[in-house]
Length: 319
Ligand code: UFG
Figure 1 (cartoon, rainbow, N blue to C red):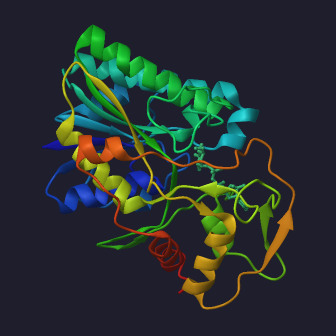
Figure 2 (figure 1 turned 90 degrees about the vertical axis):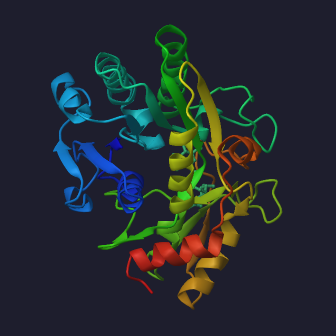
């Protein structure tokens, strides 16, 4: 069975590619390498370097595929505020092109990388899939727009789709060729920043006056390998004509200070850190209710925060 992995040269997509190949799937990768890295794609995969926005290229990439794991897209909240049109073009219009070409090629199964950013500021915690969606930035808006398009495609054209709403993805996968690290030109995520913190450039703690146990924000971190296991289960659970939305987190919240302390244990030294003001747009707590992932996908995450921090450190060659 051949799977098209869009965004397969990126951190999460490349992890999926390696695990799919290990499990005996055939894989095609479509990636424009705008943020991904061609050297992350193994030679066993068919690799098409091109854009989702080019229908011809998408058609070629879909040849022989039975299903799609759709990771490709712009994914930085801050950038989306500055370049909303780019986010709508790539994330929404690009997905429309992909879906049109899937329809033409009679490929009816897709797993989509959605985000907790679709919910916006949570009204209740932990967040259920039935919670109101009210994104607070263009990134979240584009993910929600695609979720809505997928529902429509199921009703109108019989597509089978599962949107997986990621919380905070972390950790790294050791592939047959070595670690597949998170590699961004500008790194905004907490765990990479904590691990690279130095006395000269200490990581900033964005807000120490939140109404949480230790005053710092709480997030739900999920290991990238657990996340991909959920995608492979999702591929097998898709029902034609239906669209399911499923949260992927660990169902456990960790504060920024807890992340710092896990990183200190992983690296064996105190992480330099500097208390700082709140970052605009941050909610105090984001925590997933993951019961649906368990009942629908038969999935439970198995790797804890220490494993995420330790694997990220190894992928950065820090340990
Ligand atoms: N943080 C710091 N210092 C840093 C970086 C982050 O204190 O240098 C804090 C943030 O304020 C936040 C927590 O660490 O409280 C996690 O921040 P990240 O930037 O790692 O992740 P976010 O929670 O902001 O973003 C994640 C995903 C987004 C998604 C968003 C909402 O990365 O794609 O959750 O679901 F949109």
